[in-house]
Length: 330
Image (cartoon, rainbow, N blue to C red):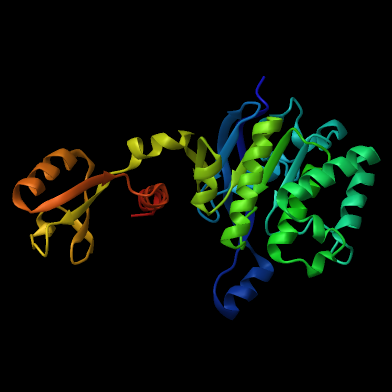
């Protein structure tokens, strides 16, 4: 049995559709029109023990809705799911002690208490042995470099320090499943890197199942070998991050270094993205890379040429746009 199994998970919200203006408000007093919004639509996937999976999608795609259903915070309209063998929305105590949900835009710690006392309250809630608690807090704060912040009021911590404390609180009871919803949002580059490194080490050591949503592709590329991509509630890709280029990228990038100040009509070969005194970057169709490289080497005075994949973030952004264009009413 997989650690997480979801089959046909669907969540439909019924929303009031108000007509514009004063007359629309008056009409709404007597008769209201509603529309169904599918936040999650027939979502199916499974995740094995120890996997670190990126869960990607634009704002409003359904990522958080799915995580909330898997955490038992929302009941689905239809479909089934099991987390560690349990139905999450039945909220069995045994499951509550084996998973954590960390949301980067929600506070889990007590704002007016020092971080240490907030963590102590979590220890009491989960019934964690005091010696185990001290060992966990000591190890985690050292790894995240916040040992000297334990006696600081949570409200006085920087955003990065608070997020690290939130992460410690989420791991205190040694969960087997961890749902991370934008854990690095708003953090500076140094804090993002520290959190990523910690998550990578923790997952490797404890084999904890982790689902990560993030708008920072650096997080996904650093941590996730597998990604699930969702848009408008529907999953349209589930596979290796490394296969996204092969499946969805329509072009490659050619970087050129020129001999002296030699000029050439590079626009004939593809879309010129950047051009300097002796360097040029061109975007070319994927299927014609070899042919175009030969033409450039024959036509232009080039001292160095290299071919790169486009950034995975750009490929996914283009993919989302194509999906939206296909689904837009004609």
